[in-house]
Length: 221
Image (tube, rainbow, N blue to C red; front, side, top):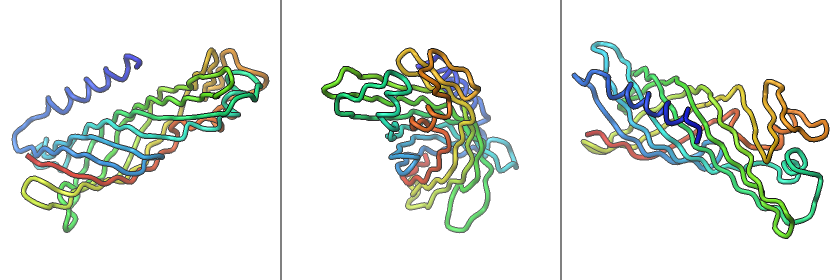
């Protein structure tokens, strides 16, 4: 994992931990649902950080099982034009997120608000050709931004039903595979034939435009 991701996680943790605790309300959420694939997310939120201001912070980490893309196109763009072997594929993405929350009053929900913040995604798609002679992984590590809304339906004093919907966008990307890379800014390293970033982006299922609808549990101390 590139050093940027741990640094972001550290800065996010410091930002939440350094906020004034007086009058703050904290919650921890475990969510599952659709996030451009089957997604799991763990997040913590702090509300009431600034007196008389409906603002909060949320820090989260997610894991998504994704379709990595087209095996035949991936092989042609990153490796060679061979067609032997039976293709198998698997893919996943980790993401880190820090959001500023703006809380609103909505009947039946607690800690309901809209959010906005940066994202950092680490994608890996593996392509294995059984009976052939190729087994390689295409990766990308990208910054993005996300928006959405979230809230909790109270079930008891400490537990609630957590709901979240959002949209993340990763505007730029570099896809690495074997000894080849294609970047959205037009940079190509050891590119094959006349393939471009557009071809690589169409072949590989890395995060670009990511809608999410998640449901889970919320715990309030």
